[in-house]
Length: 95
Image (cartoon, rainbow, N blue to C red; front, side):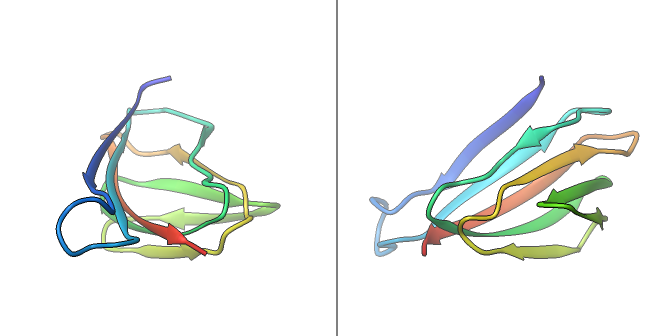
């Protein structure tokens, strides 16, 4: 699996007490990347690429400039369905 996660902001930096921000990249044709975080609300914003998001039994299409909010306790998986890397920004905080 080729999944790259780079932490951009974490609570110990500056005035931010509870917010984390990561940049995530899934390689072309990458499937099944589980990005679930226990006890964390997450929001994803698609920078570039196309993919699908599975939350429980539901599938959602992802495209540039789209975003999705996932409450804590919901397992979710990303797939890259495009011909370039799927780049996301993930914002998350404790629920």
